[in-house]
Length: 303
Length: 303
Image (cartoon, each protein chain N blue to C red):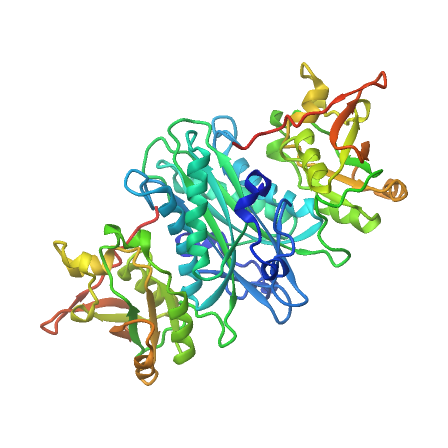
């Protein structure tokens, strides 16, 4: 989800609402208390042909996979356990039964990775010839038994900033094929006490800015420490690609320096320490000569 | 939701799944068990400009209202209590902040009718000029404390078939302004034991056929008993309009003749007895001369 785009849409309106919906603004999922002891989390995302995928260069099956995988990545972002999903689609006029089956196959392929069942949906068609495919997946998850959902707002001054995997150049292919970091998120949060976490969808610079804004902190990122992907290394500015390309679907997390060594024991994934949370607001990029320059949020802009 | 369009999309895959998702196929909402004692229900619907509303003849605010109200009507369809919703939108390129605010206002106006909070969402834009507005609302509800969610599959031979309100001609205006039958559904199911229920979205003929198919029954509908709306009375064939127009967002329910008199005590809404559930499969329409003709499902076809 991207609630921070227009936070006023989703502001809880009373203290009673806040008890029922303890997490509702600015995180990857919103939490709903369904009984004194139980809650579920929910995320919804609309993927559009030409914006989030392009059917002139990818298959319908891949688009379905990406839609489901993006929601699974939201579950990972808060270290919650995916339960089930529903999917509503707006189909182009010429979308035939074979394509519907392929779309369904892609949704299922991603869901099966984490035993996340597709339990309902809505299939409808545009009436105009030029209209494109829209896929909306909404997913439910539950908190892990080990800890509450990890929010964006918990970063503390002095925290190390870490990311999983590599960054940049996702559009070269990874954005259609990534495996959501569901298992890694659960392993990380069972191993160490994580203060803040999210998945990188709009680009490290934009998403780290969200953690900083919601935590009331700043950040310094070491350019030399960025795990630049192979795809990004082939671009004109690999560091900029790693910072701003987005759709990495990797985990961005902060934790205290004393917790950081515990992550070394993890076999699931490479974890890179890329910087430090600071008291001074704003983000900075530390260059190889030790100087710093402002780091601006230059990732994907939804509007 | 419209799971019955492509039931194979949503089939539970094992007995374990069936326990976790006791209601998952062919009803207005799918049920998810989140603990031994608690469950939530979920519905998702995609509304498209030119298919479900037309921005050349309605406002963006009205489109937002309809999207949220349609989901509330799904909660009513099973006599469950709405809890919260998320909304993902695909915006046309020229959709400005004023329109976004109007859309939000419409969503909230419907939600406030039943204290149903908008707790999250996703706002994204098409990149091509000709693309139209898509709105996807996903809603959670919980079972009423009085009875389990009412399904489509419970109709019994000899049941009276009843509808609330009036039918037909909804496109003349009602489809944008209706009040979802949430309170009426709860009042009806607290007053009498209802065997099967759904909301009429695709037209009485198509939706009654769903109840019959899922219950393994047939039905006879009395043409003279149909509560034809004022808008439908002004059409060439008012009975056909009442049977097939769709988007009535009224309740369609069946209950045993001994329970039916209890409904007379309800002050909330006019309830019309329009026919009888039969053992013989297929639907029939009884004309004023007592003869019957086949009643075919001629409502809205999603594909």
